[in-house]
Length: 383
Image (cartoon, rainbow, N blue to C red; front, side, top):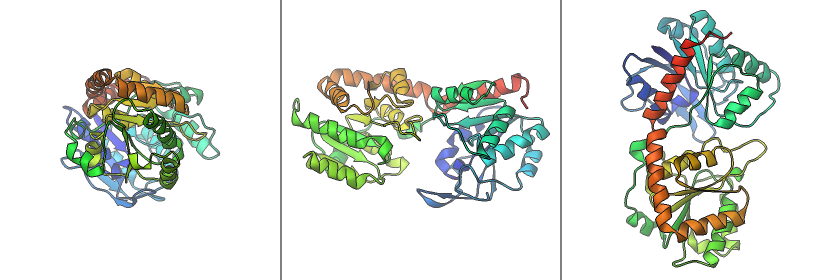
């Protein structure tokens, strides 16, 4: 089977890992089409860098409007695909994007099948021309892979009648393992049980709610008072520091700027419980919450709100507790429950690690993509 994947996110090496895993499979020939350069709102100008050991074919193109997820497009891609003659076009772009429309248009000429991957889990009415692009792409797509179950429901509301596979994000299992953290805890000034958060410091992440709940736990600790470790950067950082001061817990809260992906496990291993307190906004809902999976892989139990896909991950893995989003009293209750019953928390953590290693590794997710490719080849071609 020959698979051609187009993905602007593959300009970054860590995002190539799925295709690295697929390329290891016998009788699977993989080509990745990725930008030479991309302009990221977080990282600035990013040049393509291949993942060490990546042994599949790679073709770099220079996109016009690089940095615009919906508007960027390519030149010269048709010749690349005509030479490769794929059986499957794996389009890692949202269906309302110009790039998705470009590659879907070509599939009929090539006589190939297409898979599109979508993360969107909120139903939105897009303006013209994006609404027209989306309708046309979905009409001509053979199978869709959605990050989460809500994303699958959104696709049905949009009128997609083909098969849908719910395929979550994968995580880098060799990086996220339990490890001693005494030295780093000491260096950070952490004491007592450590409650943690890792991620962007933006309004939708709900970190202010976590500080409020933490302050309630500190007010009436059962044993040694806990610390709160917040790892991440973003526009809400100063407001969150003020919140900690206003609640009288500034000395117990440690802020660490965002760390590289390769360093994340060191900080997760400092935590006794990780909290993901995301809040749904009109334009955003937690699409997956990969940090939950990474924490569980480190045998750190988790607490998450019931926003988006968070409760599904926690309940599927058995690795923690769910609270009502935006409810500080419920989060306070769940924090106390976790910290006061450490034996149960550790049982959750061990079960969570077993489950994420079975469900969310790149090897496991690659298996699901192979099944999706085979299904796309077995059904009548759409469009």
